[in-house]
Length: 416
Image (cartoon, rainbow, N blue to C red; front, side):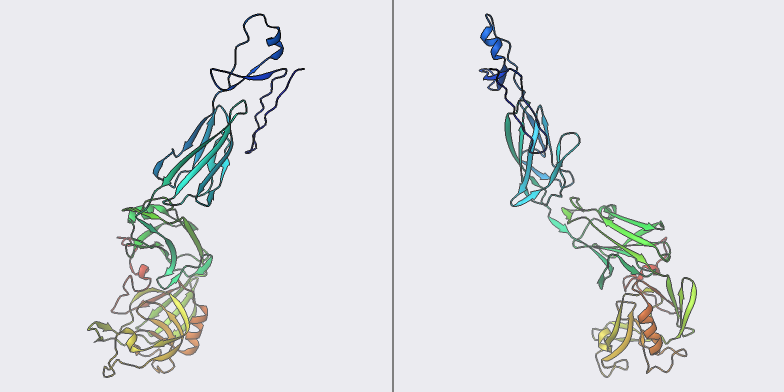
């Protein structure tokens, strides 16, 4: 009777069949592999038997190579089989398993990000054309950074950016790294996409925080997406990025407030049209010495400010900016102020000042923009973080880092 054998493999969904009608197997002394022969021909042969045909040994290639160190995270693990078929590939680092998939060219490639400073074990099972199974194990270790820089997105130094949120026309893109980075390398990893498309520039506030702004205020309805591709990339002096990150936001109506300390008025423009004119009182001017000997200026800073936050009430006192001596003529006790819209880190607000009877007439504040309660309430309810308040005719200029002073610098000088 003619014997038939069928060998089936395929844990990856690929089957190899080694079937020879009317054939049986015997061992080859020279190769150690199974050789298929014809039993009928053997029994009837009066001369030499037919030549043996051996199955080729599977050649497995694993990249990265066995025992490799300092392996980058930027390339996938790739496993290939020559003269055979891959049955399964398992990649682990301790209890963590890395996913992968077969590719159109017959190789297997990882589809999941690797981690820093981990040793990965790769176990490959394959079969040759005769269905003989084999297994190969290799290991490699990924790069070990000196420092890992995490990525966050900010609306300003006081709050994180709300991805998907709506901001005002003066809102810059702000990317913060948790560790000092090489600025040029970091900029190459950041991509800003806008609709409509606009050009923009980077400006570094420090070695860890970078801003990006267009030449002009954002147009109403603009959309902005920022992506930071840093996983596996060195950002200078052994610092690597923690992970790839992205965020997006949109611009609402374009609101620009022009606050003129000479006319004592603040006019609010929405999409180019005046929607509200408010009687105002600005900083009274003059200087004094603070508790640490620092000079304190009582002018409202001039130039474009950007709204940083809004508070229904805020406690204000002269001690908050350094005047703690009750004998100082600029001293005042803590007071709870209503409808406060902050425009600088140093404590400039648009807020209700019902005690100030010089609104629209004279500048009597300690540096804030005083408004009536009704006007301050309207500002609190209608302004967005990122809206612009441009203070005119002040002898003092807002410092670029005192809030979001990005617009106080002309575009040709921005980033220099």
